[in-house]
Length: 317
Picture 1: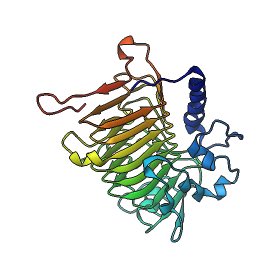
Picture 2 (picture 1 turned 90 degrees about the horizontal axis):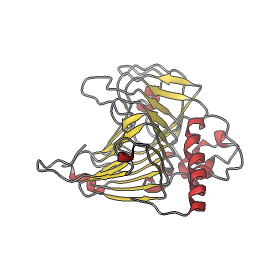
Picture 3 (picture 1 turned 135 degrees about the horizontal axis):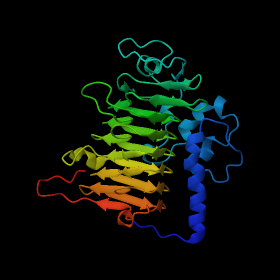
Picture 4 (picture 1 turned 120 degrees about the vertical axis):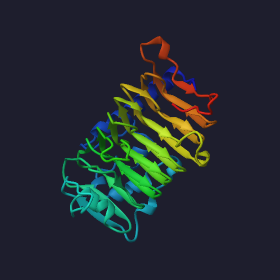
């Protein structure tokens, strides 16, 4: 997984990575003009001063295996503004995120009226053709459950902050964003850290996923691609991981791949504890143009890990 690049190319890559990844933390505030170091996704919409009145342009800006997200716009699209940070899973109230995500049929584009922290009392199911657009506000999904994408498609999750996510009810996990049997999902420009379980888990036959421009930090098991060693349907999984920043203080799974195919490109790795990119069960990983900043502990300087099946038939970690 080593990368060979020239010094000028390395400097250009560093500038591009800093522009595309560090900007995640300021994505909801006025941006600097010029865009000389914006990546291909951000150039598509951020250079337009009128982006706030042309939000649907975002659906044409995705890249990687998710493809363009134009199914999320067009005829039948309904707009919904979150005004209330409360959450009632039993009786979702108008104005809350849960109401917009679960009670409005068809295509829905969800925005937020102002800065807010939403503590979900149970995992929030996201249906097909849903866009969560956090641009223009600082929105925290924090100290409660996360998002659940269960057998859905055509979903955009953009510009949100996830931290302290935990198993809020019995029988659930503590993932910030969990995909189960889902396809055509774009996770872009979010900040995720300090959760109870995974930050992004892509499992059980999910495919055609793009994870881009996110900032992951202060977490152990960051991103899992593949349910378990025995779930062979994940052989068809295709995931793009691009323009993300991992670290500081991330331990492992950036990502960790079972069975499927992952294109991991142009990411910044600011150290790791166990490993950066890992795989088992014969996955295919294309790692290119990533910048790895090794931790000071010389024993942990290798960014990758390949797991072999043990005598008990398990290669999981």
